[in-house]
Length: 97
Image (cartoon, rainbow, N blue to C red; front, side, top):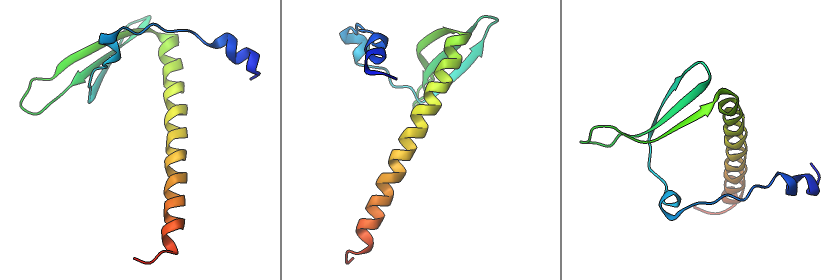
């Protein structure tokens, strides 16, 4: 993609201070309707009843785009971790213990 096309695709996002803090979630419940997908992000902590900390309702097309983005992001992250692990292994093989 050309630099010009990338610039046109950039969107300025507003992020208020409360949202910027983020929410911890270690579980997700996914449900769907005819036209949307609902993501409930849940904090399930020891000795506490699981709590939905955020609910996001997406049109089906946006949910499908999210899946592709997550797959691409996680795959590239795993590739970076693998490369870092290989560099660490290669470096340490020649070093004394």
